Amino acid sequence: MTVRTRFAPSPTGHVHIGNIRAAIFNWLFARHEGGAFLLRLEDTDRERSTEEAVRTVREAMDWLGLDVDEAPVFQSRRTEAHRAAAEDLLARGHAYREDKGGTGQGEAVVFRMPGTDIAFRDQVKGDLAKKAADLKDFVIVRSNGTPVFHLANVVDDIHMGITHVIRGDDHVENTFRHLALYRALGAPAPTFAHLPMIVNHQGKPYAKRDGDAYVGDFRDKGFLPEALLNYLALLGWSPGDDREVMSRAELVEAFTLGRVVSSPARMDPAKLLWMNGEHLRRMPRDAWRQACDRELARAGLDGEAAYVGRVLDLLGDRIRIWTDVAPMAAPFLAEAVTYDETSVQKRLKREGVAARLRTIREAFATVDPFEAAGLEAALQAVAAAAGEKPAAFIHPVRVAASGQMAGPSLYEMLEVIGRDRVLARLADTADRLEAGTL
RNA sequence: GCCCCCAUCGUCUAGUCUGGUCUAGGACACGGGCCUUUCAAGCCCGCGGCAGGGGUUCGAAUCCCCUUGGGGGUACCA
Image (cartoon, rainbow, N blue to C red; front, side):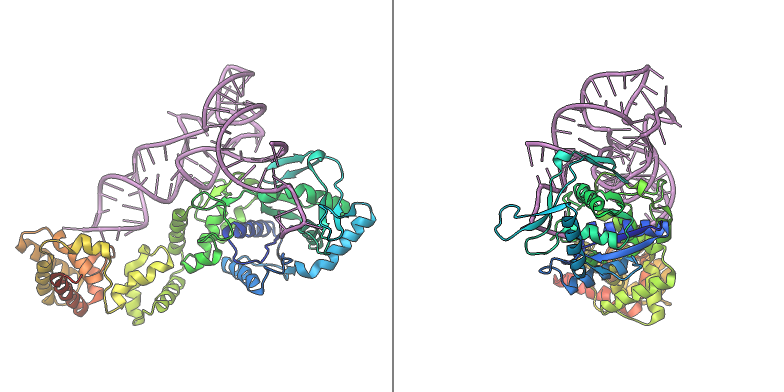
């Protein structure tokens, strides 16, 4: 039998990473098994379900590369099938009508639990069982005629031919009811796998309004989809060997439900960032370049292609996330320097720095060609003549020329920034230091 | 309250099913060193864990029980 899995979100807003991880595991399993991965929008809550939200879900999936094999099923269009199933259950004595809870709003359709213990083997958690006494009858169609989640979910999974239900473990209790429903409906039950929850950086469960938790936010913050996919796949699953940085293909190849862990995992932004850097470094050079150019354009920075290429080469591995590109490249592409406050405090606001900047400016002015080797020699000579350590010049020069105390090799950086701008910045910084306007 | 699930370094995990090869391995983070007169990358070193208590056994991270802690469920929500 061909494997068929599905992701069944209710499109009520953003997709947070707990949800998308369920989609990722369903997708990985389907791809690993050579099966199909489907999407069902559980949009029966008409108040909160919007087209906008549906688009958000699909964008998040597209971005992560979770391709769907068949047209998505909209649960709201399957209401008749749900009601028909309820009628069938009623007709065969598996359900009854009752004003449960005495709402006075009419009678709901209530499913009759079989009165037997129910057990199943969860692919992640192992054998799970529930006593008949702990299993109560439940409403499947409200008194206003709308189907309840449990009914709709099961009827649609049967309709879609789902063979493996892979979902969050907040659904384990529901599974006993769903199993009873499958049996009453005369359909074979799928295999179940319940994924442990994932909690945020503070160790709290992801709530509806949890900043930082939406898939779109990760894209906006400059993460690579491959990195998020890889990181999330490793939250609750491991390949069994020491591999961590894995490509999409490697993940698909290695994924099995048996290796999913059963305890909850905490999101670690630091490790995600590290992983992003790893994937960035493995990117094909031209794609990397294109993405960098896009980042620069977005920040309103540009330059002649070859020159930008030189700058980017200089930055290289220092870029760990797309949002690093613009601020790191700015000293090379923007006319005005943006001074980093900490760097200014630490390297410029020191005794004698202004004077040293003027001295080194004089020396640099005579360096021709304005290249790394000559600049280094000049700086060494100036330091020696002044009886100071090179560092006394190196650090202030770096901040004066780039605004930051971190960056590429100093002399190469100066060479790329160019004579005119370097000399101007050294003079300007000395002026501002003396005027106290820095 | 009742029912269910979970528990290895700060974090993610390997190891648990099929007790010994585990004086518990890897990764991120952190500390130190090399490199670099910055930062990043790379390399080396270090720090750090089987929640607690009882059993079973020649032997337990691995099996059993209890406790504690965390999570989920207990809707005419999904």
